[in-house]
Image (cartoon, rainbow, N blue to C red; front, side):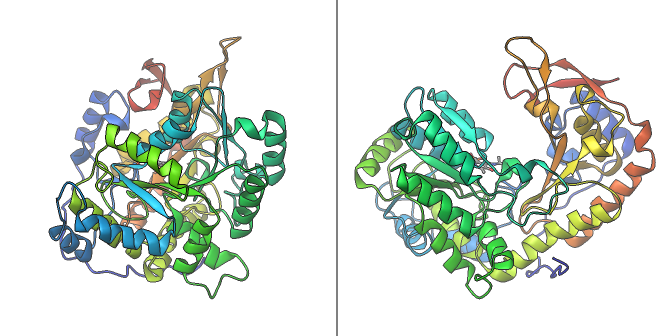
Length: 458
Ligand code: F0G
């Protein structure tokens, strides 16, 4: 994509951000144990930690919130959301949830038993966690191209259909209570899944009578990638592509904090009426009454409006264009990334940029610290800090295939000038990159250690 359209909005409310001086940044990092999760947000200049819940709502969303109906049961806000859900997803039933992982929890509570398997292209870590918490076993069956950073496959999030067939044959369809696919594939570079692949996955699941659920966090970005890249879809609207996507599935989970551009919320949608009864009972126990599901009425209105705005094609052209702009410019100055640029984030290949730092000394951590020191920019390590684990038999550390850091781009928040600033910062980092040193861990909990681990420079 060589076309980077200007922001299709103008700004009428601003939130000041400030670059604190270098010495204060150094002190902040020391205090945080060299873990950017420990920084205060006001110590960060450009925050690319996540695209989740960090988007800017439109004036339509804010005014819809004023009309939010806070009735406990049967609120107007619920029916406005139901109308948007019906138009876009077409599922017969849905419940709102407070975020994506709550929808995953309820789905697993009502469908998943001990020792059962859930295949997907790649599960996000909260989905994996929810499956494991119920005694289930997640399986990631993405195509092998996904692990080759320079490979510009247009749909690198695709499921490998042969792997899926072999997996079902191996464990048995009766041990798979439902199957999933994540669009776009966040755990694998924010890469899209083609409609052809979605149809093939749906057909394999249907052949084995395995209900098919889509993790639909970034379904609108996925739809626009299909429009741009898949023959036969160039003249369809993203709404039509989204409808075609959801029509293939039996249900979906979604964190509305992504493509519905809200600060909080999600849903679980499905077609099976009997299952819906169980979902409602579980929801009432854990989240709230089925017409609000743990959210305020005003949140439901923001989601209803945001679901439609997230599909706007001028917005999506700018959105994917902005991410591609950052990614392609970084490649131009010699910073290796997972190619092609994803939808919501750029994944920097820190292992290739800093080959003199071995995985055991965390090249991604070293790079994310430099990014903060040089530019006040916060990204998130997705390499050996987050994913290395000791072999249960030998105790030897098993490192992930890639040492990455993710720069996730909040929706409608930063401008092209901010992207240019990030690119300039990488130019500066490159000047003395060979002098950068690794880090050692001084404290780490057993699980999900990247959130709270403490480090010191080597
Ligand atoms: N599925 C995917 C693909 C996600 O990216 C996320 C969240 C979730 C489910 C869970 O949603 O946070 O609302 O409970 N991803 C965020 C991120 C946290 O930074 O990528 P949630």
